[in-house]
Image (cartoon, rainbow, N blue to C red; front, side, top):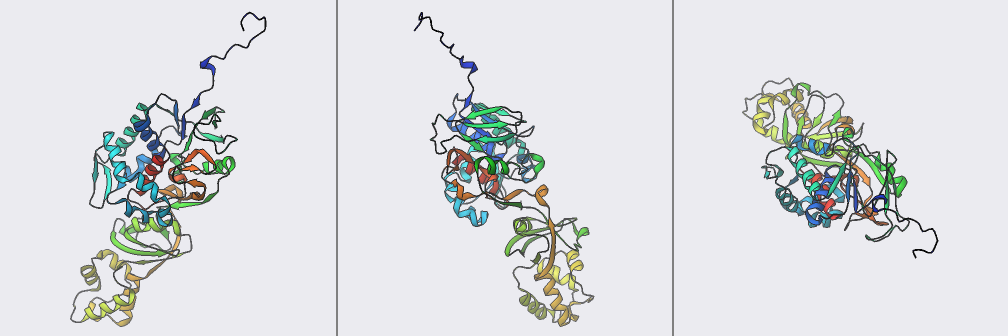
Length: 423
């Protein structure tokens, strides 16, 4: 009461009280931007919301996606997406179904980004410019009240004592920055990425923070969607030659798709898909004619010999559509005319085209990997909300999780689907 003669504490001014954010997103890559933009279009409010980016600019890896053209997602039924994520695909079924490719496309077009679908089903911005996608996401997030803070590296997370606190709990989560600043938030969304393209900021260091501060189990990370190097690679002068359909077996896995020869290594979709399973010293077998087994090809060679006056290279090029320069490089035979082939020559040709064995010397590593395999174990995640099972207000989305997809827009689709699920 006034006039009592007692000294009463002066009420702290509102402006002096620490800000408690409604939500903080850590990571300004695809998943973090999808979350902020999606939240802005659905739940715009005056509550303070903050997006923290470790580097000087957000979305650097997004700008690199699709060779700068940004392959956002894939056309067709979302049901056909599941197997593109390997063994984990079925576990994220509900996430993908609830926030599917059609929803992603609709959101981008509502933000003023018209899309186009190529013959192979890949979805791109009509402009074929990743910059347009990034600018639209940033503008939408800003209009929805999101504050972007760059050069803001998070070094620690202090979760509330009541780890199962509901969303409206008064016990905020504390985020510590490299500068020493301490930020408080009611909801924390971790979109910290993996370890691929470390120059863009996702260098894998955040996994240790997740272990230390949240006690999370991290499945061993490894580069995925990266070129593969082999010993005695002889195709330097054939760089640019591609094969539309091959089968590659390595590390107990088999992938089928296109193959590309580069100056130093194998690349292309089939190689990128299998790269996460290979390691140095592994044998890798390529069937350049996947419609034929070794025995079937040998038999066809025998049957086609009669009366055939073509050279080996001309025959294989004309009959199977193989690049002649490749055939001349890979087939160790001195026979000029196809009709003079002996049985041993047929065996060699069949082996080199349907069971060509190479020894893996390594991969492009994280510096060349498009995505990261491994990451936060899904057993710790409530996949209906993307929250931690023992921290209801902490969510993890995107590449930080142990989910990785094939090339073709599937990784950006999961970034979107997981972000929307966490809202």
